[in-house]
Image 1 (cartoon, rainbow, N blue to C red):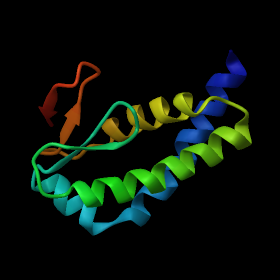
Image 2: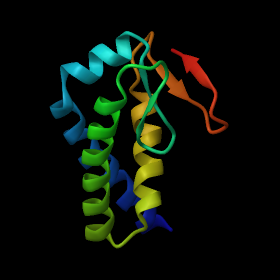
Image 3: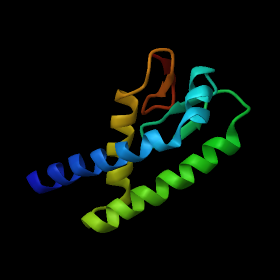
Length: 107
């Protein structure tokens, strides 16, 4: 169990290194209230308009999450959930985050 927790911490760190590279389009969409972070580690559409951006970023995230899961020998879902927790925790004031029940909250 301790190894799994340590591994998930490492995974979260690696994921966060990839997030800044995604840049301004995501930040703009989040600031406009169009996209928000979900507990599953992926962007979700809050208001119509940026579905293609969300799909593109989510594909990149899933690829990275799968790399980490494979490298660490853990399930993809474990990486996704850990990333979701970290990304929600890093959400800026005014950005939307999704609760486990699917409801949105504005920070």
